[in-house]
Length: 125
Image (cartoon, rainbow, N blue to C red; front, side, top):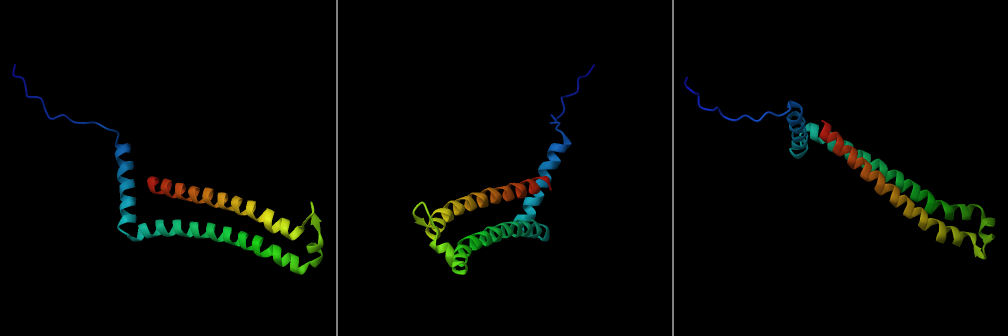
């Protein structure tokens, strides 16, 4: 009985794991190559980030611009004291800064969420 020489070793893997990797590389290649599909992905990310930025900007504008307008339209509010401090000073000096910090925190969290969702979309596609 003659013994045949051993054949070349073959590595067996799941076809799903290789397919997922190839698709991810294809989408990132589309983005890197600036093709039409890549432009759609990037444009959707930029549009979502712009909407978020505009939302935060509008809230800041209403908050910071609205309080002085409120005091100009209702002059009696300027005469109100709270804890011995005039109400306009208290609101503009005390309310605005915590509100800005909260809005900044909100913006960062939402921007990170958008980027995470974009990364997940790229990985799934």
